[in-house]
Image (cartoon, rainbow, N blue to C red; front, side, top):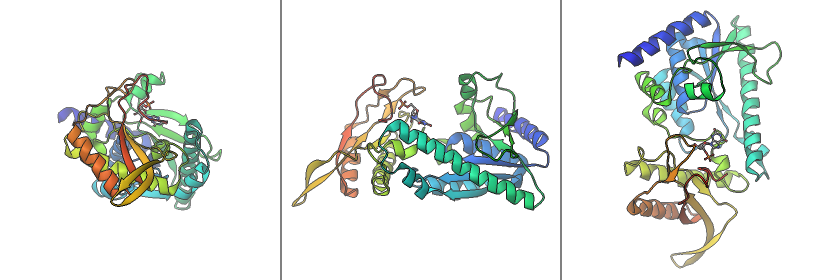
Length: 326
Ligand code: XMP
């Protein structure tokens, strides 16, 4: 498509011009925006870019592999993965309040990234190089929301990232600042970003951490991850991805109910399916998923995930219910 190609060419020129011979880092989340932004910057400056992926342990099944294997293989970008799973679990230990969970996850994410960025800066220095820039996948709606500028600018000057040592500053590269989500997806496809990433539904930064109602533990994450993977697989198979904005699967970890399986009584946990249709996540309606599809999801989850003995459907619109349960 010529318009996408020209947007890409224009940004490549701008990025090369701004960056010069300096190096660049980018925090990859596995979502659409950061993946496309990094792919664009990589196309412009190749190995001058290093991406950092923080595995906080609150990811869904396969998400780390999608970044480490599929994305890296198709884009060819240099990637450093930080395995911070234990750190996040220990910080979240005993925490049940949703806002506190968000605060802890956000704080630990920034700290983890800053440590990784500092290491990369020092490493580069040893090799006589300098990391001068940080890529962010800011889109036009984010720019408008935060009241900033015309949306055409590519570089904001001297943005200092919170907790970095005082002598480390990065300028910000935001190559998607003028674009809407559907344009970002189109450009991502043009750049060869894997379809599973380009077409990914919204997933909150705090991840599965706010989809476990109660304390987040490794065992609970594993249970939720398996149930979520089944629901996503079946909704996709049923051709519902276009109709569904997102479908949180929520583990009611502190609730138990009695069930029966074979000759035995079970005392397990419920999961909630929360399929919603929406234009912008500000308002939403519950998606009328066909009963047959719900039935397959319910049977598979209760058969394949031992700890879960009940699957329930959330039929609340937003408002009054939010999309997420926490
Ligand atoms: P709610 O639950 O407020 O969600 O109706 C609206 C949209 O925002 C996402 N969401 C978040 N995204 N950090 C994020 O990055 C968060 O803390 C967070 N909370 C909710 C949610 O998935 C939905 O798309």
